[in-house]
Image 1 (cartoon, rainbow, N blue to C red):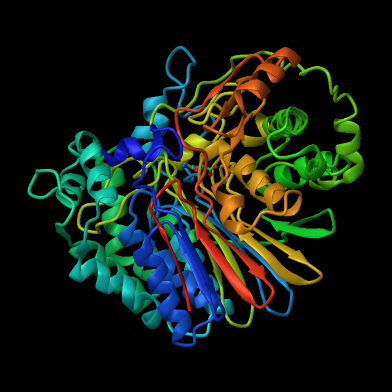
Image 2: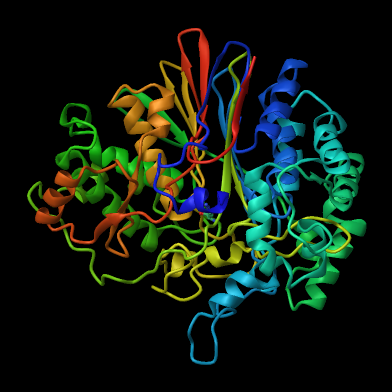
Length: 557
Ligand code: DON
């Protein structure tokens, strides 16, 4: 029942959908799991800072929201200290050393999607544990034991499953059945869990306890690493002890842009999110979207055309900057955006050459975003993922955690769409130890050197457009955070040349007008677009919302 709610029932159709909104003064956490948000709030209330809370929430999500919260995956963090310094941390997965460019091609040279998504070859070297612990060491104030205690307790003592999680587990049961440890974790003695059941994860608790005691070595070395590598050996995966031991998260310079007097701070490559967000805002800045009106034909036409151009640039120019020269300054410059948008025709849709390159994902993939702010104004924006929902569905026997299938984010073959219909080329080709290109867009926006907005979202290729719309809703349309996040959205990504919209995002008359301009492939989205758990700073308070498209919770105090 709830699975339908997650992605296939048109927005706003179901009364069960929870809109969560809170106003608080001392600190706030917004995430996809109310349990994890409470964990983060408690850490803040005990005097922890935003990074302490972020690390606690990250580990708690690995327990309470296992489809995307993880220790076997990776992600990105944008952190702004109360002194105004902005840092980004890349804890994205890496290709194992034995990976190679053609590893997902079959004998005909075609991409074998089953291999790139549903096998242990699909797994990149996980980054979440190293990233979280490194952030804690650099900016946290509490001990590892303190911030990990709630996650350990949750895994060990368990928690009562709600309808959301119980139905996700039930829906995925046929996939979990492939692997005994996955079945044991996500079923109740081989039968589907029901809402109201207690769910415990003793093996995950043990793994978390090792990490708390030994730090990163508790995951990247020793028994947990042995169990992960043994799984690789049994199931033809590539990750070795050397891959695990050498994994390092990287601190990178945030991408920075400006829009209507606000400063945008976001994630650089290997995520495409920050660069594309700023490129699109730069293209749109000369037009007064506020005056054109939310949902007007003119503003939607403008935004689709900005999306088309930016996503085309993504395919050509973006990849891991340690392997490919990304023209970052060019893509971020207002002059480039002006030139790139010079052929915009208010009367006509432009062509996305080679239409129909891609397909939309058939399954509902998941990632998750959380936003945190503490009493001092330290702000954290983190998006993390296993790529698909529950990654490759493989729970490491004995260690109790799921593996990602992030390798599918590479361009396994030039111009061949990945799971999100995104194409890429040389910039994002597979290479040993390279990080796969992402769309995750954790973002912090400031105004006059004060935090204004903390946002980000899951949604694969739709992430960047989700954030674009949250930003435009707040800045151009003066919406409060509740409306900005919960307004319906649309998405275009150059190829395939189609526009998908949530119910209410585009009025029927506007759909007709857009078709007349040449946007012929425009239709209702079969799934919800994004899940932007966000916080806005208003006067002397914080206002947070957990996106009403899904369960989740804001916890403030
Ligand atoms: O990094 C990326 O862009 C993707 N692996 C994110 C996957 C995702 O958002 C799935 N979400 N709903």
